[in-house]
Image 1: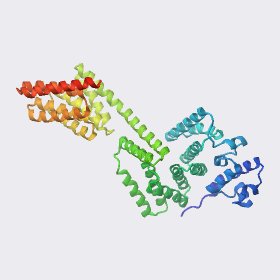
Image 2 (image 1 turned 45 degrees about the vertical axis):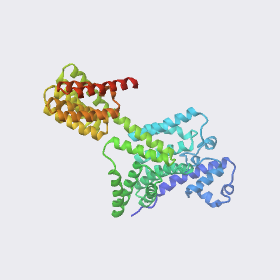
Image 3 (image 1 turned 180 degrees about the vertical axis):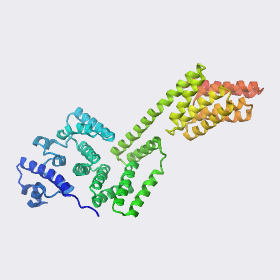
Image 4 (image 1 turned 120 degrees about the horizontal axis):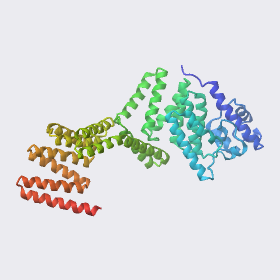
Amino acid sequence: MPYIETTSVIRTVSARIGANMRKARTERGMTQAQLASPEFSVSYISAIEHGKLRPSLKALSVLAQRLKVPVTALLETAPATGPQARTLGYSPVNTDQDDLTNLNLLQAAVLVQQGAYEEAMQLLSPLASSRLTPSHAYRYFLLRGQIALKQYRPEEAIADLYAALTQAESLKEREQAEQARNLLGKAYLQLSNYKQAEEYLLSCALAVEEGQIIDFFFALEVYSNLVDAFLAIEEFEKADAFAQRAQALLKQLSNDERSYAQLAMENSQQSSAAARFALAEEQARRSLSIYQMRDLQLEPGRIHLQLGKILEKQQKLDEAEQEFLQAIEVARPLNDEAAFAQSLIAQAELSSKRGDIQRAEQEAQEAVTLAQASNDVRTQGQALLVLAQLRHQAGDYAGSDLALEEALSLLEEAQDHELAASVYFRYAEQLEERGEIQRSLDAVKHAYRHQRADRNSV
């Protein structure tokens, strides 16, 4: 059975608002009647101040404006002092302090992701008495709510997330408001208050489906939370419907970081086009961070590849092969076709040098397939060059020429004039050995053309 909102939650939120509102009113010498008029009654104000009633977001905004304090002053954990209440929620004059607040909020967000909740709170605690912009206040309360959720303190989470929602609505930021609602839905799930959870989460789902929020990751989380909510009350058809929506989203992705990063960037571009710049910035930052992590994961493979080439030059072929194989093992689980292909190209060249032509051919073919999947034209060209050389060694001149011409076309597309010139010179020598003098001369002309293009590009 759905569980009605607990008395402890109402008491926590209502007592906080009531105490702060009474303090702000008395500091300004206002009576309850003056604060109430004209929209509210004196008994309504009295009930709020005594913690017996929690005002709606709209009512809270009206009362805060009448008291000449930001809404955050009424939602603080402890009653704010007079000077704090008058300034809390407004942009600080000191831009250095503003930068520091941004940094503390960002670092706290990272710590929350790491599960370092106590350290995150150490960064957030000093901000309680700081002069916060509404945007900073939103992030401050949202992070506190997230921490309380992670530590299974739903009553505290609801109080902070309610404050975050208030700030988002005052900023007229739909995306931020729905993020707060999604977390409120999770908090009510922890309290087994499924009716309230469903209300918040369905609002988020509607925003996604109407195109109000363009964020794949947010949509996926909301649908997953709704599945949990409907499973808990045994509404299996609704649970299945949202599970199917989540599954449909997942089918858009391959299971690797690059596809997530690409989708985050696509979301950012769509949000930017819709003039949702705060969300677009967050999505672009997410995409960049995923790409940076991917590059860092690939770096060991690149080092192994470089070491292998050094060892190969020194004729330490066994040691070189071990490095190339390690480079392959780094690239394989990361689903990076270009890095995988580059390692296979190096290994194919080494196998050829050792006279194992059959193995070299298999490695070169696999490298070509991977390079094509990567859309990296230069790597495709390099893989085809190895294949062409192997076929030439086997006496398959027609197959060699076909692979070589395709490789040179790709190098032209990549504007790799230096490599193209080198290949044309080598091809000219092969053609001369085969007695094809005119084709050899044509290849030399192409080589010089690429040399000139390479010098002009410097």
